[in-house]
Image 1 (cartoon, one colour):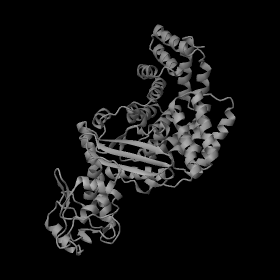
Image 2: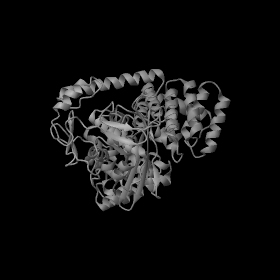
Image 3: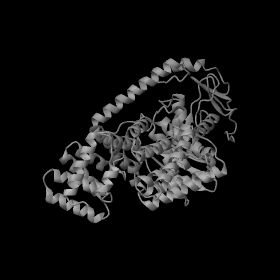
Image 4: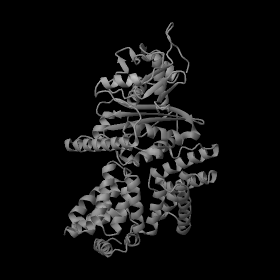
Length: 566
């Protein structure tokens, strides 16, 4: 970084504070053992500029020009960088980095260290004299660090409990808004980037995260994060923009406190497309640090650099997944399958490609939209097995396995996978969806209802809410709670009348309460919308080894026959 010190100013070589030394010659912030502090690149550049002019006010314009150059950023980026510096230095009371209103920032040099690089001992004694308000950030032995982490967890837990009691959002709650597309970048690419980031966030057990299906409602609305926080009951809102230009990707993200509207952390990165996975890991790490989430080495576990053909394959796979999620239709699923197969041909070890092929084929079988079920199942099983060898803990791996368990009617196996998904991805509503479906077939109706209710709480505006309501309604029917079943099934049919079974179940629940005329009207409306629907479909789809489940299903079939369902 080019230095621009004031004329006549004797440039210091080192500045030392308790636990840290800023080496201006090497351009590094080191701890007392000479190890880099881990301060992110832009924050370190800001600290170096301030260090070169220690004791003098450095204007905001100068800092932004020297650190970010021609990249257009807002003042929030500078504020975040200064915040990172203060956190690393333990400067909670702003004794080291001072804000000078309407001018800039001033780095106050330690006494007797300006230009001499004096030992940190004097700084330590001075910090002790300052009293308990000054943090001592020297490296500690492992056991005090673990004790501090435990105390932090207790404090966060207590804060979350107090927030819940007050009806306010818990301190570590997050909504990741749909990313915006810049410069004509394809929506499928932007959605894929946001989806990869969301998969990491969904694995954090200490954070409450709103489901992706619910936040999708904010796409293109340019909403105020404070309004999002109020509507969804979260403390933090993450927004982002993605831009793709040839083999380069630019990603801009901001994490906002939904109560105050203050930007807590922001990042602008421009990397080759081949390094996208590493970039997403870095972004997740920034969010995690800000929310004090311990995410370990898993954050950037997939930070591999892709070859050009792998980039092309991953792009295609993103398109296939986007097509699979866009709508439930035979043409959409078949299109997703074809795209995923094309991607896999380019890169046989592409994880997203393998998942796309497996999920598309299993869904075509589940919805009875393929003429060769045996071939589709075989292909889904083959690609899922290959994916499991490459990435056994990937969320997409478990989702492909769950879909296959559904195809095989292996409800005990589906429950095992659902439990694993909930353990590793507790904030992903699909995890709870699979548990709900498995528990229903196993005759564990109360647990099934709670699992679907959990999915709905995570993502209350998800496109699958109608399905979860339908599953809960059928579970209530199986329990003989027909009034409760009617409530849930009505909600399901109103939200999505395209699924015939839940209309049939609604009619049966009403008939069980003795309102035959009303039940007959509901059945007629359902068959008018779905003239090809037959009781045979219910017989073939709703199967289980649980006697209570089959007895309840047969009771529903009998009612449907009385209401003139063919």
